[in-house]
Length: 104
Image 1 (cartoon, rainbow, N blue to C red):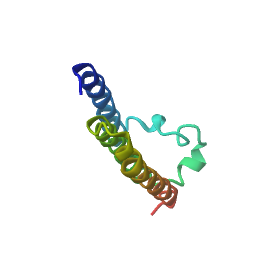
Image 2 (image 1 turned 45 degrees about the vertical axis):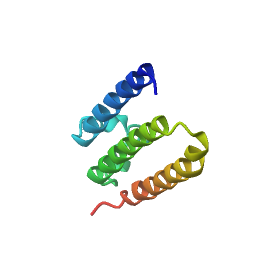
Image 3 (image 1 turned 120 degrees about the horizontal axis):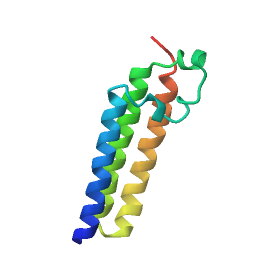
Image 4 (image 1 turned 135 degrees about the vertical axis):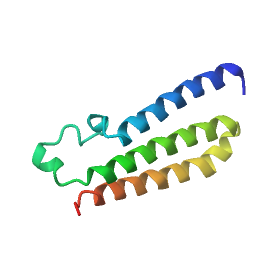
């Protein structure tokens, strides 16, 4: 891996970590797709703490996946292992965010 790629991925990583921290602290609720455009009565149906946690974990998982793809230069390994794992995690994230709708 060359230095330019490491620099670009490091810069993206820093931005993603900052984004995850901003969302977890509650300052980035407007950055959550769907939640930011919902009406107030619809927002009240969501468990916002759980929604923040799921979104932050998905951001950090995406970050780990980007590093995985950069470190593993073999595209066959990325396609056979990485993409199914990425798909599974995102589907699980969708299911969990839909369940966070039930406020407890």
